[in-house]
Image (cartoon, rainbow, N blue to C red; front, side, top):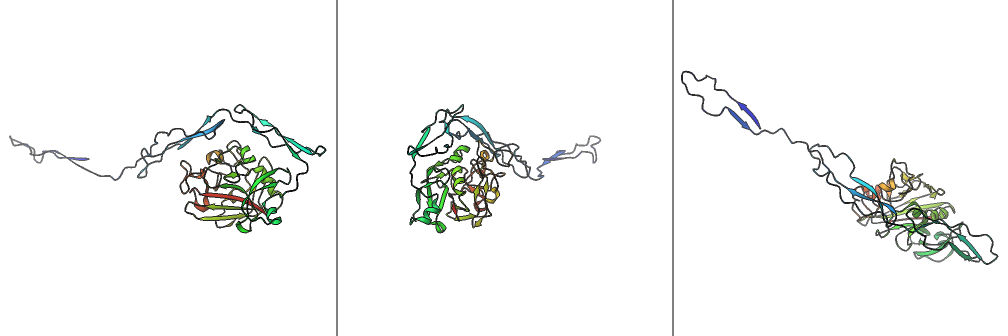
Length: 355
């Protein structure tokens, strides 16, 4: 509102003359433009589920700057929209170390090897055997899917056993014999979110999941297999709208334990080279921070990966509804930024082949 006034002085009433008729004050509406609205935080949401089923993990809660939403040049809320806290889900099963080398010699026809059960405040005993035995006359088997392709008539995708060339460990692997000439050993596969990839470093080192479903083969196995010789890496990605893309990277190898540093040449394909941003990076998990960021990118982006500061490719991130963005921090989803930016992908496959 604005106001104006007038006086009964033109002329003043004199000699019993009447006072002026009407009001001496008048108001009217006025408009100085739209006011800025500063944003305000909503209440925090309830704490989400704990990230682990046993031991110590993390749980999160969020809030949004919508009470009110900033408008007309108003300020955004100050502070974080995501908060984490530790949570405890009871004792876990203990964790095995890697197996020791097989015993030397074969005088009894059997070789043995041992491993150690690691325990901490939150661990119980380990499931499985302390000692493993094998016959000394195990026949020679193929070292990877490339050797199977080169030495057999097998051309059907599926699970096959291979014998690692150094440790002599026999493991099942998934072989792709159809893509680009075949002979690929698959080491990561995701398509429905049935396996949680927010794991500890030792889980990523040993591998998890089932090779006939969603899985991660294990850094120690990948390191041993790609050290056989010159190797190429291939990514195959599919978006929610059905779009499929790929990228290949020559001279793929990993550094030694415990860093498993990623080494690749620049990518060639149609997905966009999102992996080169991670070239030369150590592997980071939520309990083993080796990225170049001030915090822990594995915690921030909900995965385990060769994080830089933090990610252009997060194929081990949280699996959310394909085509959507992960709530809170979109980069924490299973994303490949040059392909679909922060839109969550439908499927991801990573594999290598000797050349």
